[in-house]
Length: 79
Image 1 (cartoon, rainbow, N blue to C red):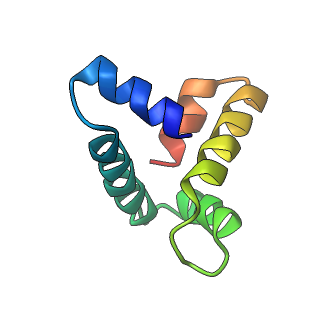
Image 2 (tube, rainbow, N blue to C red; image 1 turned 120 degrees about the vertical axis):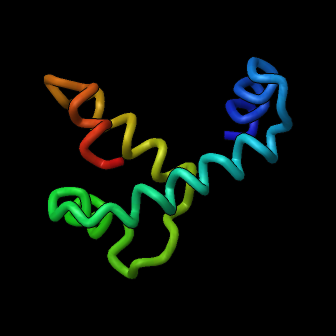
């Protein structure tokens, strides 16, 4: 995961720490979405309500997108 953050950081002229910070901010915003479908997804990802591990979350999202017939709609539904 560190390599991915570093590559994204390099492509955007920021630090890997900043990339991780921004991902965590986006994660918190997505978790606050009141839509019942979105909340069901987050309950599946983190049943205890704690912030999920980023590596596991990204792997799960990638899997969800690959299995979806409409990947763009699937991703938008969790944000």
